Length: 107
Length: 119
Image (tube, rainbow over all chains, first blue to last red):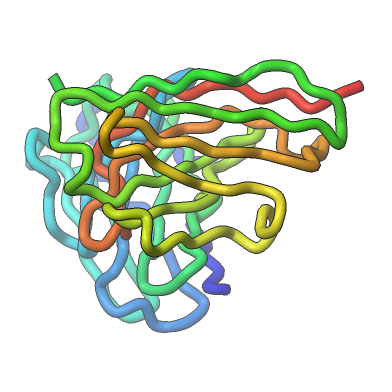
């Protein structure tokens, strides 16, 4: 199985900050990576697919990059609505696997 | 409005069975892969299983193989997860999700249904 790791596990930031979250895969997954945002008690929301494609309706302050084994999710200017937990997920091969999550909280 | 609504969760004893359902609306259900994803209390997301549009392909995470069965009824716009031989570690919120690109990533999620396995 492909193992996904994320760093940091927790990130404290302020409104307006540029935030970067890193996701690493235990083997190459090409660009078959998605990013999700989840708020407490809510279902995940798709942000990015194929490593860098922005899902329709998602604000342009979110962007994704990377390929192979290293990926990043960047929020260019953190907004109050962005405080949440973020997960990466590989879909290169079964079983699909998620990273452990990165919680973005208020500094 | 595109919507997924799960049902069927509850409290069950270890070794017991439960069948989850997911009712889809607002899109052509038969055109999409569908998935189940779960989240144990206070933990991260775990992909559980998915099924192709016509039900001809099904995939599972190893921890549920032989115990869980995913199925669908396109005439009823419904997805199911039959869960047998339940264990305490199956306790989680179970989400139904619509898959894109061969079911690889999930663009529409239900609100989830809670399964608790305890004596």
